[in-house]
Length: 351
Image (cartoon, rainbow, N blue to C red):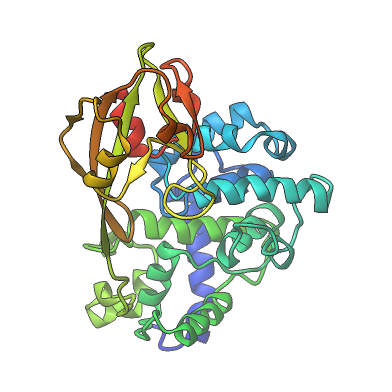
């Protein structure tokens, strides 16, 4: 059992590359390509989102925007409409701006180094490294959640990753473990390997250590407590908010939707008008409007719970309180499905 990083490094990289070739994931639609546009698109979509969820979105994006120039030329509403339901909508806004920047700054070709890629909107250090490693075989380390778990366990790295200096030190260790030979083939394969190991075997709970190709190198396994790592003590506080949603329908069966501001919750999406309380919503309605209070439900976001209270109202014409709200209008059932809508609003209207 290697006791030092120096002893573990060559064996770790070689073992991971060999394992991925035989047992890793091979058939995902963004694999087996060195096309930066496709790799970048998948990396952005996979941030905090499961592969099974991304598959359909990835295919639809490529069908509508087959290359970075097509995505750059699209409208924000088109992009948000296709992204609708995938969540973390700042990714979609950054995706669109990044495509524009690739066209305007780099002539429509993604830069080939992580150092240049990281200057683009929405591309952080790990995403830049993934694109550079997969597409250009650059010797750079990725460190997403799955990879942090693999490396902290292999190295028995017990420093608290909520401390910036400790995470920085892990980056240095991750770089030291990278392949050193045959980088053209080894870097894409190794990068995929550490992702695959974290996604399929080195799980947060009940890791499949018996099937792990680097069990013999894993100091966390040797200590008998791999699940203790990674260590991250600082927890983000959850918050809770109540939102009252006005589901206004006119005599034609159209629904009123308005585009939200570019900051805050559901930024840039089309949405039912929102009030912070039932009393404030009621005060805005015409006195003759009959309210139908629908069953409330909780919509869970990463760091907050939204308690949603839909109120359905039939209205004649367009009352001033709606037209004064902002960028809103009536949308038919044939029109609104193509808009970028928050997932709970889409679910409500679809029901």
